[in-house]
Image 1 (cartoon, rainbow, N blue to C red):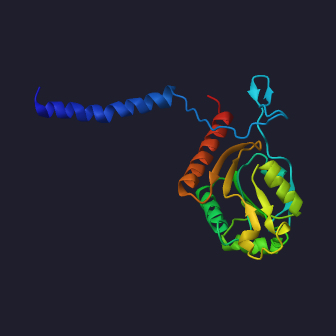
Image 2 (tube, rainbow, N blue to C red):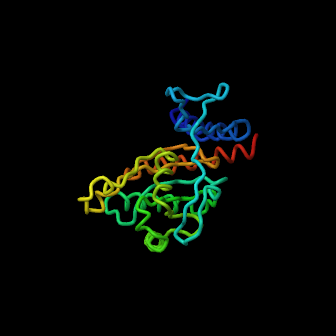
Image 3 (cartoon, rainbow, N blue to C red):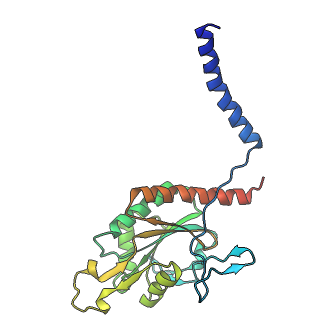
Length: 234
């Protein structure tokens, strides 16, 4: 066999075999997407709770807060939606702008996906009134009905952060009245949380690290595919 014939055979194989594989997978293959559940529930002894053979996982509890338009926002509005949550405050000059920029990326990537929401909770609710949040939302070009900035009673917000999202939050000025620098006053997490349509935590990401943000964007898409497969069983 000549060298030219050999090269031609190799070229045909390179072109044809992937096509056959693609057709086979399209006709006979199944796509399987997996994304872990986070935060298993524990009993008073620190043992993972089980329901039969299944692990019981933590769900975001019901809550009622106020959004940047002054309207009531409850957890019912997240039912049946995938959403990305964070905690921030408008006077923050350190990590919060990075977190909000990361949320902008989520908003941009999923602009045509009405099943994906963004929810930002203020840890400085006494200052961050709906009017202040509305100005902040405008600064980041937040889309109405897609990205919500929430405020409310301080205890309600902090309980939701700690008990609901399992994230640390504190107002250091309550313990040290000498703290005047607002960036030193409020302690909160840099994490972004991916919550599924049933309220389960499906991912935790550092909102200040690009690779984590890319992973978040990819895993939102994975979660969308999981729901698509559930709605269209083969």
